[in-house]
Image (cartoon, rainbow, N blue to C red; front, side):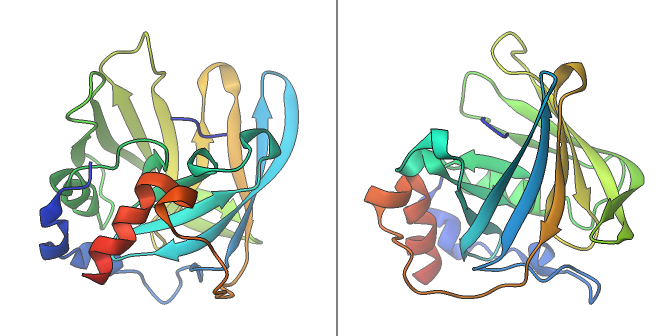
Length: 212
């Protein structure tokens, strides 16, 4: 499972490319549940994530992994379907969000820089076009390499992102470990999510800035 800086100016930035999904895109929004299969270190497990909120270039998810417990570490934001940030960590700066959003539409060779203010910056590079089997059909996708400068602390990642939905569908780890998306349910908006800073940590500011 995925274990991995929001500027005040973000409210002034639009993300048109982040919204350009086609009619074939999977329905994905608050209330959607994503079911995953995880093959790690020789074992196979299942887990699920639920979308609880969204903005112009991001969605906020709740992990139902019991070992994570309750609190910000049990939530994450996914920017443009690519950039994963835990809600107990710093959010990306506005310029990073714009750079990742500009990767859409996905095309081989496009790049973006993330974690630029950290000690372990990373380069996002779109690789080859491919197909990913999901929910009974083959769907067009691209491989994306997230290359961390300091590999001693963080392993590089390869993810596969759908061409028509801002959604990571496969995460490849080292030594053959892999997380694979199996099913996405339709949005079922609910109003009982606690979206306060105490509950979802640094992700709360994303929603405040979106409202403003």
